[in-house]
Image (cartoon, rainbow, N blue to C red):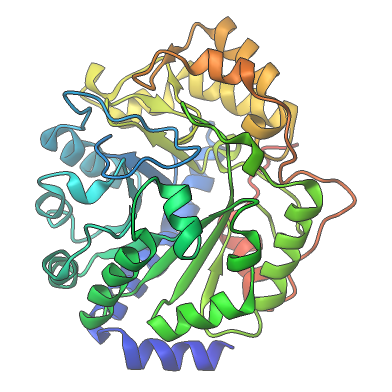
Length: 397
């Protein structure tokens, strides 16, 4: 798998972009995690990886989406976004996930990301607005990888995304990226309606044929005004998904990403470890993108690093989440999460004012934490990467 994968990269991705990725994301990412571990030993917690939602603008209306567009839109001001990235670099943070809404609708996105050539940015996009001009800008900057969300084949994509011809438009965006020889990713939120189509070798082979280089599977979480809880996976579905991920990793020339299982197949929550947190489009410091509560805001301080490190709310959340489950506290313990947020006096940062009511309406659902059903990594490269680079850090004792 590894020789075939590197052969694909050499043939399909601009060599300058590959070198930039290897240096900023590869070597820089390892340094970020080592710096994170050193901070932990000194009792300081600032994430190795930050996720930034730059806007709540969006051209689609997806089932289970926790983002609600507002008028006027909520957006990180360009100066604030630039400052957050610049200050995070002081702590060796070099990788940023850029989310929305739809981040390509953020007017000055490429201008700001282009100022930070020593960082690497993963732009989460639905792909429907990803045209040749945007792909060309990503190639010119050299420090961006597009991660295009695919939520099903033709019919299911329209149902899941609340749009028309979404699947074709997303793959048109992928084609624009392929022409510019970008490093291309696809993300998919696995649920009942798309499981059969997307958790399949046929889908994986199709992505390779389209020029996709990495695939990120994650589990559907029912949030927002249209939670569509009927789409949630069963425990058996989640085990089947995990088994599929482990099985295809040694056999296909693309990287298969997950952020929710360690090398031994045990569940984990990145927010509980502190390795990642989220800053919302209004500047709110949140545990992770779907858990939209906060007590601090990046606008309230000139020093975002100090604000995150000193956040009693984020620190208490890490302890609370780790005490409840190794998996997703939102899926598995919504009642406890609601009670804890209310006791903390945390602000609802959704823009809807309904987050506590949404938690109250949720039922406990299966998540990644299923003791006795763990499936360890079978491929040595994934085992090493997870064991020594990305996961763990003592959050669970």
